[in-house]
Every structure is written in C-alpha cells, then in structure tokens.
Image (cartoon, rainbow, N blue to C red; front, side, top):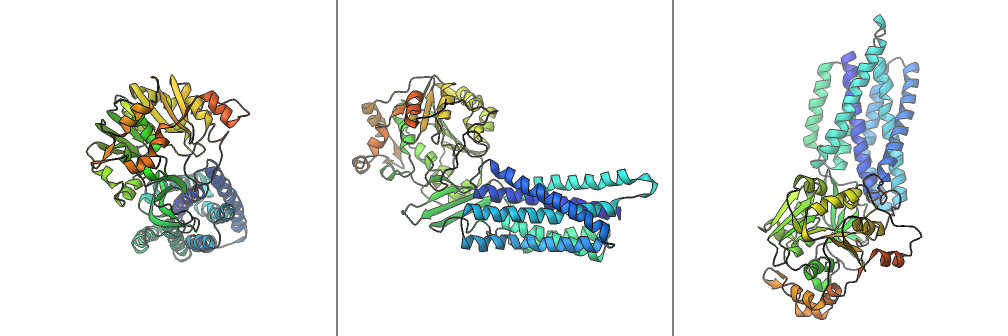
Length: 513
C-alpha cells in the first residue's frame, strides 16, 4: 500500500503544480503580462490547497474506505479539468471583459487546487505506518514524493510540454490522467496497475489533438480578426487585422501589441521613422544588433541600411520565426546572409558575447510596466549595452513613455535624448547630431530589394518629415512635458520601479508607444 500511496502522491503533485503553470499562462495573457498575475494565481492556488487539505482531513475521519473516496474525488476533478477549455470558450463568446474572465479564473483555480489537495491527507493516511513508531518516517516519504511530483510538474509542463502541447490540450490530458488514476484507486491498488495507468495515459497523448485552441481563441475583442496563431512555452502570438480602422497584420505577443508587419515609410503605422532616424544620425554603421525580433519588420527595414555588413538579431521566442515564415514582407530576413538570428534572451546573449562590438543596438522594448522588463531597462542592462558599443555607437530603445528610462540612460551614457512624439530614446557616448541636409542624403541611400525605401511618392506624403523633423528632447524638457509631480528615478535590477512602483496598465490593443 505504501508504494501505491507514494505513486498517487507524486502524480497528484505533478498534475497540481503543472496546472498552476497553465493558470499562470492564462491569467498573464488576460492581463498582458502584468507583474501581479503570478501573485493572483498563487493566492487562489494556495487558498484552494488549504481548503482542500482541510476537507481531506474531514473525509479521513469520517470515511472508512479512503480509496473509494479518493478515487471519486479524482474522477470529479478530472471531469472539471477536461471541461475548463470549453468553459473558457463559452464564456469568451459571451464576454471579453478582463475582470469577469479573471474572476472566473480565480474561481476555477480555487476549485481545481482544492479538489487535488483533498488527496493529500488521504494518501498520507494510506501510506503511513503506525506500527513500530514509523509515523514520522512514513509521512515524510509521502511528502517527499509529493514534492518530487510538484517539482517535475512545474518543470516538465511549464518548461517542456507547452512547446508541443497547447494549454487547452494540456488541461484535457491532465483531466484524463485524473480520471484514470481515480478509477485505479477504486478498482485496484498495485504498483503494476499504476505503471499501466501511466502507459495508458501516454497513449491518450496521441488521441488528443495537441494544438486545440479553446481557451485563447475567443479572448481577443471581436473587432480583431485572427490571421495567424502560434502557442508555445514562451506564450501566445497572434497576427490580427483590426476591422475598426482597417489596420492589417498587427502582431500581438501574449495579448499585447508587439508591432505591425509593415516596412513602408509611406504608411508608417508602426513608427519605423524611429529606426530610419538612425540612418540619418549615424554616418557609417557597419554592425548592428537587434534585441527582440518579434514579427521582423524592424529587422527587415534595418537591412536596407547600405553600409551594414552584419546584423545580429536576438529573439527569445522561436515562435516568431514561424510567424515570419508566413509573411513574404518579412520572410526574407530568414535567408539574408547579413542577418544572423539567435534564439536566446537578449541580456544573456550580450553577456555571453561581450567581445562583440556594434555601431547600432536597437531594442524596440515592450511596455515598461510588464513583468520582467526591468531586465532590459535597468541601469545594469545599459552598462552591458555600453560595453558592446563601438566609440561612436548608438543605443536606441523604446521607453514606452516612461521618463525614468531616460534618467537611467543618462546615468550611463554621456548623451541621451527622448524622441518627442513616441518616447524612443537614443543614447551614446558621442554627440548625436541630426543635420537635415545630411540626413536626407543618407535616407536616399536606403535600398531594399534593389528599390529605394524613400520614393518620391513617400516623400510627398511626409515620410521625410516624420523622420527628419524629429525633436530630440533632454530629460528636463521631458519632465516639463509630462509635468511630473515627482523626481525621475534610475531603474535598477533591485528596485524594478517601472514594474511595481510606477507600473501602469495601458490599453492592450493600442500601438506600442
């Protein structure tokens, strides 16, 4: 019996903590990667565990057949798990309100955590030896296997399985395992039968569609038409059209605006003038680094710079490469001999390649309030970037209108300026000079696929003006512009102020500013 109890303890811990990773993915998607998403999931998950363990204790004192009771609870938990994707699908057809959907998440997190936690006292009763004063040792072994299962659940499901199985399918597979395990508790209780259940569950892996999209399919507003969809362990990528204003090929990464598949200066709906400005202010860039490829539009446009010999592009989510392959406007970057794409974390890649030096480092950063963005905006990161720049090199990144990012850049670089309209920041240890005549001459030399980027038609429609009339503001001018009621602060890895102190949840479907 003790081996059977250990196996049940391990598998229940595996499924329970694995589901916590799934819930975090869902809540984080709803709130666009806001830092409080994990805290919300953890609160209701632990609340459910506490309540479930309490109910399990009651069952242990009142029920004589714990195998029968535990089996029925697992079967019921499995049914709930299987229904979760369909509950979301139905709910999102009725409403896309974040508050209502989050409330539903909190309720379901509590229920599924509580149901599985009921098994924890039960397996301790089944696996504990009272004779010969072995109670402490027996309890510790059951708990040990539960910890092993919990660790493996979060590691394997969150770190590996979600690269091959969608969140919706993972809920269904966990539900199937719960039902099989519950049936095993009721019918037979041997180690051999546990192994048989594991084999049977593995077989179910091939029967369930591993890429069903019940949960995220209808979470987007109805005015967004989905063109492409990629889901992996890093998150969910959508390429959508906006039926309200006619914008096409908008890239959403984990439910947040992440760019537009456009490189045309004439219809500059994704602010590419901020990139073209680098051609106007840097005389002769030869090596460039792009941190964050996303849909590839900025990297594709950057390849038009005639003097560039090498472009290193770092992207953490390999799913974007699958998106890029589908759209001819950006897919050439995958075959361009000048462009080297690396699947890695940008900061980690810079530290591992500290010997490489660049004339341009471009980072079209995500919103400053999102979880983990401190790794890109902190003073420590900017020191790493500074070390990777040539003497006349320029670091250009998106502040998403956080004045603290400019203060941080100024603490590292001798010169740092704020692009007046959208808050892009240009920093360097050499003076940054924008000369209109020289800038026009350099922009005229931008060529892509044998054609000039700035045609006469695009010039007439203001493409030149959007780039060359850019106002580069100092920190003092930005503080006056925003009329801040506080002092700007330096972002560090320790204070994480943009995420927690001054974080602000903006409209998820507006252009990234």
